[in-house]
Image (cartoon, rainbow, N blue to C red; front, side, top):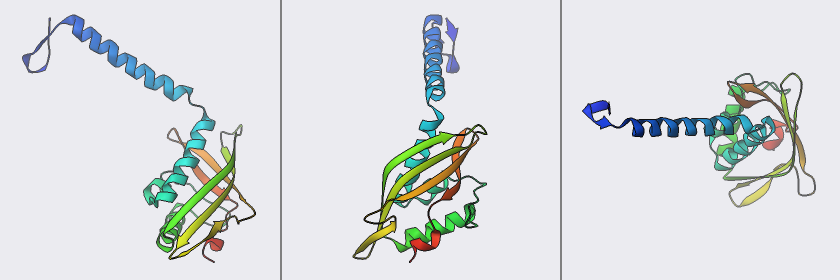
Length: 166
């Protein structure tokens, strides 16, 4: 018998069973973590970001963006935050459709997700395209890096921020 907290007596057989069970659970999560490919992780970042935008969840969006975000339009993470605040304030409902997604990982450990997408938004009683058009999708490319074990977006190409607010 082993004496546990609060003076309870636990049989050594039960203690071993608990330790084995905890070790099995830890191994399961470790293996699951190791078996998920970087491509699948990057795809999850894209779809989590999509879901966050559609829910107008600013924190969920920003969780996918790197602290070192910098794009060709001069936007950084703070500007992206302000842009999404403005988008979420201006539009009542946002729907994003992803038609195709292609993930690549370069030798320098940068990921790229090239997607064909459309986004519609409703404001009042009007609905219109804010990304792409009724006859043509928009090619958007996200560049990602791994920060603290999680892929995050460091650059976006293919969407001109000013066009969203026309």
